[in-house]
Length: 305
Image (cartoon, rainbow, N blue to C red; front, side):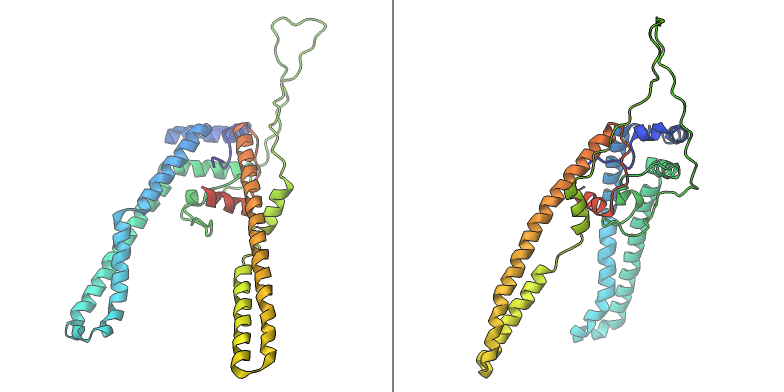
């Protein structure tokens, strides 16, 4: 998915935002109103940040920290190590210190790559656009240093600026003609706004049901175990009432089938939602002002990228 937080056309639609984007672009050497350049920048910087997280220092630090923390708990398992107790405790402390230092170093390098360079300028522009009333369709979690689930404030959130009054609409200027005739009048040149695709009913229903469900498997297993337990108790004790628990077995099957049917329905709705996001992406590329996505669509887009 190449859905940007905001398109260059929308940034250029407000003179104040356009001037700010130009000044910030000069500072960082990037044309932030060029959608192709911004898309390439985000893809390149995302790969760089992922590479920072996979550096050997991060993995070695994590392994050293885990070894230092869990080594003391393993000492009672081997009485032969009692003679070297203080040496092993010192080694565990050393591993903990080294692991912590490596993790802090890796975290510092990642935050430096996140805060520095053109990404800082782009976040600044997004904050200015939001302050001027321009909606941000979708902000990737990694751009703000948030987790893949999108939770938390993030290590580099979009800056917040005081809201700005909307710019007054400029009067339409007549289109000049080379040889005007008395019988014709100049018509004003008014840009035609690109429409945003309407949200289908299936997408709205997906937003309502995206967080629902997920209990059928657990409930089906509990019903099946209850049925098996009732039959076992009836056979062991000799009470015929326990055999009534067999009725829970078809109920468990019905719950499983209902869950499977709901899963297929949600998958179909998910495909419709992805199709709608692609339509928004095409409209944004054509210059439409895409509204902010719902939390369900943002989560879907984050998981699909």
